[in-house]
Amino acid sequence: MTQSTWLHENFEHTGSAFGLRIVRKLDEVQSPFQKIEMYESSDWGNVMLIDGAMMVTTRDNFFYHEMMAHAPLFTHPAPKNVVIIGGGDCGTLREVLRHTSVQTAVQCDIDEQVTRMAEKYFPELCESNNDPRATVMFDDGIAYMANAAPESIDVIIVDSTDPVGPAEGLFNRAFYENCLKALRPDGLLVQQSESPLALMHLILDMRNAMRDAGFKDFRVLPFPQPCYPTGWWSCLIASKGSRDLASFRKADAAAKPFETNYYTADVHQGALSMPPIMSKALGD
Image (cartoon, rainbow, N blue to C red; front, top):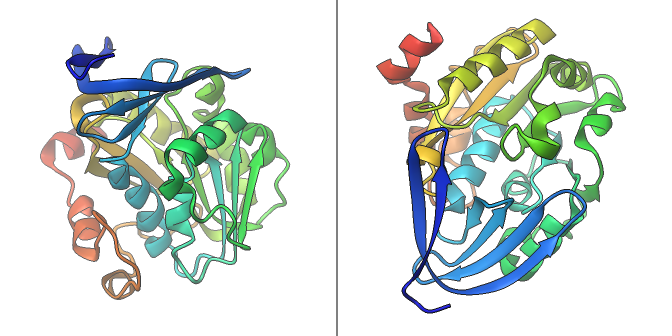
């Protein structure tokens, strides 16, 4: 490939596309579950595609990983035991383990090849994989949650691909019921919830399924994610108890002892101030 070669992902369901200028193809593997491709881009660092969909770039992954980890962990009063379903690139695990209160963090992704590719091409995302608090395992996340001990987890982070293929079963009431059972009384579930601009119907379906499963309160936090459809993404936080998700440990977030590129206490507060286009659609 030459430097003038462009890689485009067409988002048929949003009528849009995103493109990156590619220097060369680095690798490709067909796992038992999906095709994983790696490219080097001219301006965005390395790029991971799964079944043709852009998952991670060196340049912009911090938006997603920081919001998926720090928003729920600073919302929970004292997160000690965290489970990540999916998250094979290990970036969310790295952010979770920045919290000194966390005693155990289990990452359960069905596809080992995603992590092996991340270790090779995104080593900075995998720098906490050998943390003694971390358990990196490769198994069916749906089965893992079904077999989890009742009231054993503080925060569950569902860091999955789109709700198709291996991830399809992570977006339904049965899965959420198992998550609810595994959470402690003040536990939180957070899941990537796609684009609030183009895929609001999915967010509504997720919230309804979580409510039917027994979750009590919900907040959708939007954030930028340039390489995903529309460039505007979100995560949906649900609480097992009656905790008001509009509040969080703002003083702790402001005094966090680690650096971030996007997440701050003020950014978190701003994400809670839902724009009218979202509040109208969600009925909030």
